[in-house]
Amino acid sequence: MRAVAEGELVTVRAYAEADIDPLLAAVAVSIAEIARYETWCHPGFAREDAASYVNWWRRAWADGQAYYFAVEELATGDFLGSCGLSGLLRDHRRAGLGYWIRSDRTGRGFATDAARTVMHFGFTELGLNRVELECAVDNVASRRVAEKLGAVQEGILRSRLILPAGATDTAMYAAIRPAEHAGPRTLASASEA
Image 1 (cartoon, helix red, strand yellow):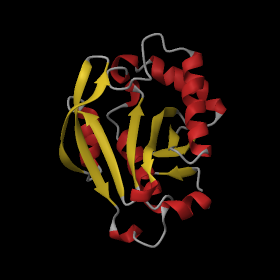
Image 2 (image 1 turned 120 degrees about the vertical axis):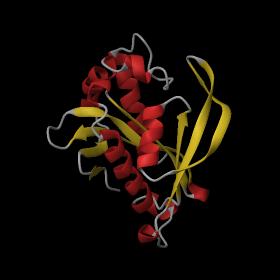
Image 3 (image 1 turned 90 degrees about the vertical axis):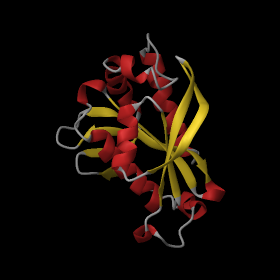
Image 4 (image 1 turned 180 degrees about the horizontal axis):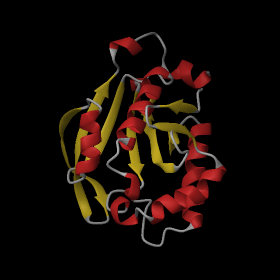
C-alpha cells in the first residue's frame, strides 16, 4: 500500500520515528488551538507524548486499523501537522477523516490539500465508499475544510464528544466515493495488497 502521496501543496507520508521531534515542535506552537478540540493534546505535552502519538499511528497502520500521515510542505519539506483515516468500518467501507496543521502555518490551504490527498487515498487505496468528517460545531476552521472538500453536512450530533470544555455538539459531514474511483476494489483486497 502506498505510504506517500503528493497534493498540490503538501506531501503526506506514513509516520516514522524521525517525526517525533518535528511533531513536538508543531504541537508546541499549537497547543492553545489544538487542545480545545483534541483530547491527545494538552498543556505540558512533552516528547514522551509526541513519541506515543507517532508510535500509536505507526502501530495502527501496521495493523490496518488506521492510516495517519505526517503532513509536510511540498516546497520546503517542513513538518506541518497530521492527517489521516481512522475508525475504519471495513464491512461498510467507511472511515473518519481527521486533520490538524500547526497554528503558525494555518490559513494557507495546507489542511484542505492534505485532507483532499488523504481522502483520495481512502477512495483509491482502501476502496472506501464514504469518508466522514466530524467537527466540533464551533471549530470553524475544520468545518471550512470539510466544505472546501465538497463534503455535505448531514446534521448536528448533540453532546457527541467530551472535550476539555465539556460535552460538545459536532457537525457531521460526509464525502461519498466519486464515480471516477468506482470499481470492485474492497477494503479486504486493499489490506491484503
